[in-house]
Image (cartoon, rainbow, N blue to C red; front, side):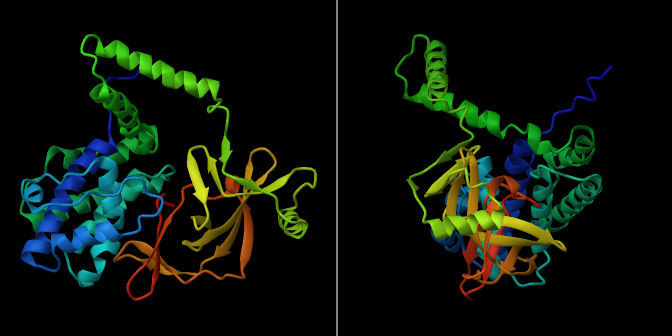
Length: 353
């Protein structure tokens, strides 16, 4: 028999992204903008406005000092995740290498990487327990503030992962996204008599559209198609040992299970000695009815820069082409590449490896 005390619910979205992260980011922003005065909020907002967030759909909003002073960083959970993910690249050049408070951001970043990972080992639980304790200790030490309840909730996450697996599998982000559709419909509706029936009818109409258009049956959706020449087709078939019977067509973009791939998408090809190999998509092909093939150029990974929490790479080798099936990728989630002012290339991994 399961006890009710064994069925403990944890939620990364509310506990971390809308909880501890906001408290920590509020302190970090006030510390660097008001105490050390390394940069201003205007500079940060300008960089957010001009930053290339790549495949991210939720760009952070502008920050105001009034909201930060009130302890209210006005970002949604997904916007907060994006802000934290790229904060090192946004302002890392202002922060001295040995600045002690920056360690709080790095530890928080490592905690979030474990919490949003879809695949974990038993050792990750012990690592998470240590990192959460370190993060709480650093926050107490530098902020001179008290720990809120959500900081305590995080201390139990390692045991929840041991019991139930990766906690991202049961966070409430997807439920909130589903709920958002009905909230938008409720605001736009002029019906004040029976709003629940209105929302139910709209939901059924949307579901009917999915069934009639066969969206649930399509695992691969592609953009405009174009035939390829026989030389190119023979090259790909020889590289991947493809069957000549199946068709091979060039497509402008491809969407597989909700993830869209287009030209210049950054993917993770392999991991060698803890250093991942990244590639940039040069061309996309559809093989048969539902397999996607990428033609890619490889980057050379220099190493992991912990100060900005990204991988430093060299420019891709144009002539060093490789071909890979989408379903054989280590991670199906595209990454983001940014070129900083000194010409260095940095790749931010959106799905922890």
